[in-house]
Amino acid sequence: MPTTSYAHFRDVPESAWRWPSFSPAEIASRREGALKINTEAMDKLQTLRNRLGKPLIVRSAYRSPAHNRAVGGAPRSRHMLGTAFDIAMSNHDPATFAEAARAVGFLGFGTYPRSDFMHIDLGPARSWGEPFPARATSFVSEVPPAREVLAESRTLKGSGAAGVATVGAAGVEVAQDVLAETQSAILPLVPYLDTLRWVFIAVALIGIAVAIHARIDDWKRGQR
Image (cartoon, rainbow, N blue to C red; front, side):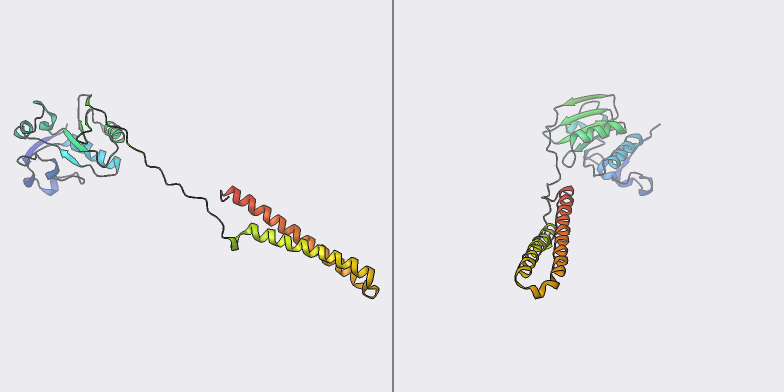
């Protein structure tokens, strides 16, 4: 069973306060500092704070009867029992907050979008007030695709090597034909030139393969 105690927030010993996210001054009546603690309600409030992972700004918690009358509270307001809290929505999404509050055991909900707070209490289950307007959802900013530095482009390097090798192979083939027709004394060099031509062709093929691989890899990583 929850216990209820009365005190002045300045009289509450620190060792008796077991709700680390809140201070007695936050929960006490704003008029004269009177404090009425319902341990079940406070336990649920601390659990809600832990669940949401961000501060709960308490606009009103316990109210003395005099303070409740002064602010126009309901004659049987649960604030006077220490089982109700008004929480600012300035740092919370109302829908997410209400869902979490229900999950930890709060049953009564009052919504006040014009004053930007939500009332929660231990029940009975009921709700009142205007709905909060939908709030914009934050999305992760779009990051433009990474681009290779031109001097470091694997595609450019592969294509360049293939181009140079192709030109080289063609040049060797032309040289072979010229030597075969005009320089019979240098005919022994023709086989070597033929080997050199095939070397250039092999380099060209490797360059083309490197370029194709780089393009496929970039496509997979979304770089192009």
